[in-house]
Length: 334
Image (cartoon, rainbow, N blue to C red; front, side, top):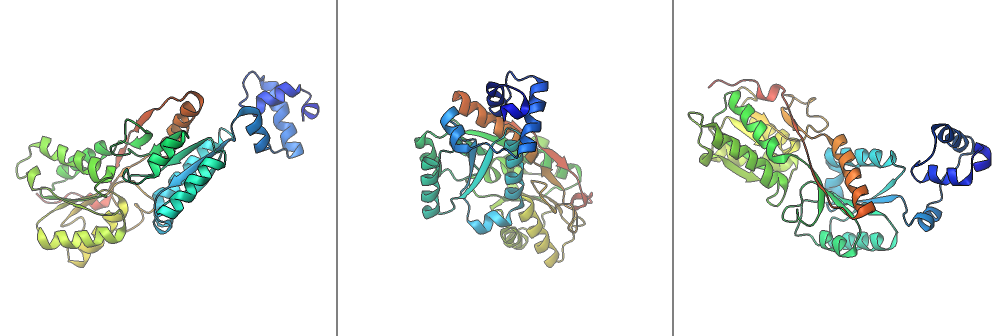
């Protein structure tokens, strides 16, 4: 390789290990030689030389069916993989949604030589976090790990701000009687998103709005749970005119229930979601939602991983969110 590129073996080594102290001309020559020879770095050799394998494990403690059904997981896996690729790192995905699979994932992490683990968990009661922490493997979670924020590095969307933005928007559009379909009670979508929504309602001091009358129910992020909870809310509190769901799938299920009950969206009820997941703008009506920037989250995540791998520095990063306004919240009559 060095002979083909016309540079020293030391230059090739520095190029393959991050490009430090390699001139632009030498980098071009090594890149050309790699392309012409089809060279692929040997992971085992790199591990022996640098103490690192260049491989990150993406651990998901959700059942396989939910993992493959949720477009957010797909987006996260794609974006994290792309961000790692820019640093010449690879990724393996481990499903650890039940005790047997969590045990297998733990065994893999301890024996495979991965450099670090990414988790996408909102379940602090699950033993996965404790296992990874005790193993000493660098760990960064996607989303705030409720109750463990001072022990686990994380990169999260600004969930509370997203809830606040949605509440202010629904108030501006004329809604006055609100219900919220939150995520699971232990998750950011079950705590931070409805919390931000409630805080904004309390701060608004708008006539006809009482934050204490806000109805909150917890779903499991599935479309089915959004539909079933919305049916219950329609029966128990039929006069609500604003609905916020902690993710787009539950919002879409809620819209289905409202249509079943003969209530128009947005004519009778304004509906907002969270995520701006694939399809949010394509169904009827297009959904107003809070957008998470998965590309930015992935980039911040890889940076946090590097800081922890290189220097044991644990960082927590909150990524801004943005309100995306579509037809599901066209102005209602006050």
